[in-house]
Image (cartoon, rainbow, N blue to C red; front, side, top):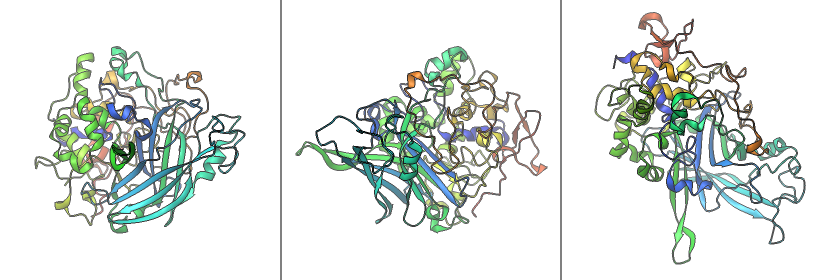
Amino acid sequence: MCGTAALALAVVAGGGGASLVTEVADASSHREAPLIAGDPTVDNTDVYAFVSPDKQDTVTLIANWLPFQEPNGGPNFYFFQTNANYDINIDNNGDAVADITYRWVFTNDDQRDGKTFLYNNGVVNNLTDPTLLFKQRYTLTAISGKSERVLVEDGIVAPSNVGPASIPNYGRLRTQAITPVEGGGVTYVGQAEDPFFLDLRVFDLIYGANLSERGQDTLAGYNVQSIALQVPKSALALNGDETKNPVIGIWSATSKASMNVKDAEASGAQVQVSRLGNPLVNELVPAANQKDAFNASTPADDAKNQALVDRVLNPELPQVIQTLYNIPAPATPRNDLVEIFLTGIAKDAPTLDGSTPPIQADLNSQILNGDVDPKNFVPAEELRLNMSVPVTTNPNRLGVLAGDNQGFPNGRRLADDVLDIELQAFEGAAQTGALVPALAAGDKVNTNNVPFGKTFPYLALPSNVAVNQIDVGMPSGGVPGGAGGTAPTATGWVRLASGLGAIAFLGAGLVLARRRRRTGLSTTAVSGK
């Protein structure tokens, strides 16, 4: 390793790693573990957390479930399980325990009554139309310690997008499904186009073993079940003070009722079956026989899980790439990844071995919160967001990698291109001071196949076209205006002296050179201390 400056790019691995491992898995957390692959209605796919661009005193949290929904998958289409808890958890004091849990619980409103197989028997223009024969309703509860408060009662889920004849205006249904939340904010529950974008031919020997298989958005046209919540920053911050305590940790989890042997039905205690913080963690880090256990664990278990820690210190992905492409794997142990996965980024972040954190910058560890006692901090895998980082006027899909400090891994926006960011990080580009030229273009999928919205819930409307009719070819070159710009060319990284007044990429002293300098995060601007 070549010092603090050489570690800059490694921070982008905070998204949980690139999905290049050669195990049976799919995108992000889509079918990432053996047991959850057989129970898709409770399978977490992705979590997003960002300061709302149009309401900057709020934060938007999005969690998705039930991957790979082919739009024409009737007659039952897609739904949330009724015997399950769908949770978004907030840890604002860094003790690896949820300080706030937002929980959605669902019930069915089925009017078919044994008379028809149809999901709807006519045009559906409104959520309350009698032609929509199957609906789901939900209750949203906020849980803090032993205190519970109902925020939404009898909310209505937006249905599956059956098709243009049945649902001529899905946008109207979505608007009707956006529901006020007690205490401030709104929530949306319903179907959406899957916002994650990447080329999954990574599993065919890493893009064909010669990078010939790239440029197709494998998830184009598929839908997911989405839960979105927009609430004031103060509702999430420790002690309600987002100025003094701006950093939060986020993860989603799903639990379902266990089987009651006596009654032969799912009526027993709730058991956690899926968990997701940073994208791609369960694909990259645990071995295949450890994945189900990770899904059943909580963040408080992570630092005590030596098998998990060992695979962070010595990740498998670089070894796979070395075998296929003869690109030398970075030296181990990868203490930089320990900081990223388990502690967040901070100059004083606690480490597992008592050493100085390798990335000397303040970004998104709860240790930065003024009311956090360092003695109570517990390393844990969470998606961390510093709510004090200003919204970027012109977002870049590469996030912090391109000097856009509001982007991934500081939370995750819908348009952040986590795969391209992580690929270079895990290949040690920060340790060598240069991008790996053979992998510089990433997967050549630079943006989602359809644009995201500019207002809550920001997700694209669900597709109603069969996936096998969708042109999944992606244009070469740049991305549409406003989607974050184009990928940087592999012209390397240059070091800047610390006295220049601008610290590149998390204060680590690097900038990506493409005939101009890009500056990044100030090492003092985001601390809550």
